[in-house]
Image (tube, rainbow, N blue to C red):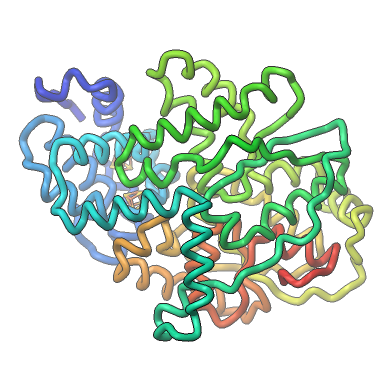
Amino acid sequence: METHIADRFKTLASAADMESVLRSCVHCGFCLATCPTYQLLGDERDSPRGRIYLIKSLVEGKADGKETRFHLDRCLTCRSCETTCPSGVQYAQLLGDARELMEQALPRPFPDKVVRFGLKRLLSHPRRFGWVMGLARAMRPLLPAGLRDKIPASVAAGVLPAPRHARRVLFLAGCVQPVLRPSIQAAAMRLLDGLGISGVVAPAAGCCGALNHHLGDGAAALVQMKANIDAWWPYVEAGSVEAIIATASACGVELRDYGHALRHEEGYAERARRLSELVRDVGEFLCDELGHGIDERRLALQSLGLDLTRERGKVAFHAPCTLQHGLRRQGRVEDILRATGVELVPVDEAHLCCGSAGTYSLLQPDLSTQLRARKLSHLQSSGPAYILSANIGCQMHLAEAAEVPVRHWVEWLDAQIHGGTSC
Ligand code: SF4
Ligand code: SF4
């Protein structure tokens, strides 16, 4: 699509990238069929093609931005359109640049600003978030039912294995997940420990930056990304870790995109690119470590202590958009689950988002709730005992309305091997 960036936007660092992505869209419309918001709303402006058009009008100086922002705010950043697009349009990259541009060029109304400021300052700082969650849990019995459902009970992490192996991987410290479910990372560390790999957490690392990035605060996201790079680089430079493991697929996508996000940052661009190459989702990493083919994986799981003779019933796996469309690692977790002998039930519309999408469930509650109801009807249609997922956001969002427990799959697998209370 031919694009002529307006003079006032030509000096932006992202101008050339935006123009290149805009030009790569050939307007075929294939992406409309797999876009959750277009499926719900039937409005072209709430489809990938429509949003690309709106962004084009914005950067060409032909739109005031209000209509563009309204429809970009409704986008889940689920990247389903990227998986479908035959022309390889890098939609999420364009969306991120456009959101940042709009936050600067078109100030939001004051109440909107306050909400977004609060979310950024609270959710991406685990100490602050932990304090608020502790208070909310203490007051839970006094709260109305609707609010009570949003406050999950605290879960113990369980025993963390000492870093005893020569083979080591870095784990992301994260922000929301260690407060809501510390058991996820601990379960992943126990599983890897059984395979002779120790997980370490760099004390100075923290939130991956995704929350600020998706709320259009690129500057704050860069600060968090640089802090992580500074915290991890000594391990990478010394060759003491072989991968950076993300146990939340949304964080995995953000980490994998550090190379792009920091491409203009002096002193960080090359390190960011190298770190991005080391990022692995825990499912992808574990699947490779367990071996090739179901028989080899079954033997490896048995050597970890899994009783293969035990009846495990049915589970439904919800593949987060960040895992299937962002990281393009669909099928790896399912391969591990099948090797345990559990019955993995088929799930219709598995490519569609559950409506969680970071802060989307808080900022777009109506659309988010509709998507969740649709997703849960498919996940629960075969009567699974558990719904499993690979991202804390999806897990918490689905759990609020699900009829069966919702867990991260590593928690479930860890409980099958080591017992414990998380499942
Ligand atoms: S499928 Fe790709 S090329 Fe076609 S309209 Fe959608 S984004 Fe553009
Ligand atoms: S990211 Fe998801 S919601 Fe947004 S345009 Fe693409 S498919 Fe639609």
